[in-house]
Amino acid sequence: MKASVPTSTTRGRIAVVADALEEGAIGRAVVGGLAVCKVNVTDASAVFAREIAGDVAKLATVRVGPIPILWREAGSSGEKWAVILLGAQASNPLYYRRLLPIVDATSSGTNKWDYVVSVDGADTDAINRYEQTPWGHGQGVSFDPGDLTVGPVEGSVWCDLRDDGVWEFDQENPFVPACAGAGE
Image 1 (cartoon, rainbow, N blue to C red):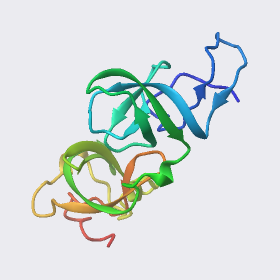
Image 2 (cartoon, rainbow, N blue to C red; image 1 turned 90 degrees about the horizontal axis):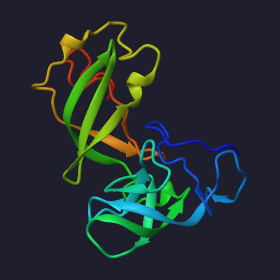
Image 3 (spheres, rainbow, N blue to C red; image 1 turned 30 degrees about the vertical axis):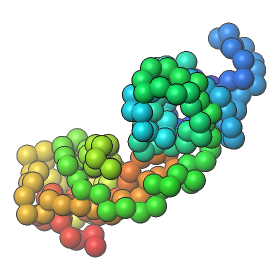
Image 4 (cartoon, rainbow, N blue to C red; image 1 turned 90 degrees about the vertical axis):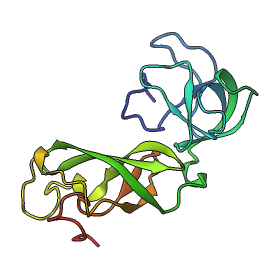
């Protein structure tokens, strides 16, 4: 298996090498099961981790994420040793469907929106599965960035935490009146 430096699209699909490797070298790595690694603790109560884009030395703590932290060194900040469980996203106790408030949405192009939902008081990105299709909202209508209407249709949506640690909901754009409620 060929490995590369984590990017913003890695989403929990990582390997932890058993020993330091030179570039182009072959060695042992953990892709599923227990692994020991460094985590950068930015939230003392976080019990999950995710990769840091461009960083091969450590993971970052997050409240909701794809990699459970089973144990870590004491301390409320900085780099700490941790035992993580790779490939265990389904064991995440927050994996199940939850009703989450949408706190922000911005247009990222025609029929595509970037959402932010609040999870236990922390804001995190979310994806609308319905808008990932080639036809966008599924209405046969093209919405421009200026069509975002936050108002009477603002509210919460039912979200699932995907195996890669990304929250996802399946509803047409809840902020555009022409789409609100159409996917229910």
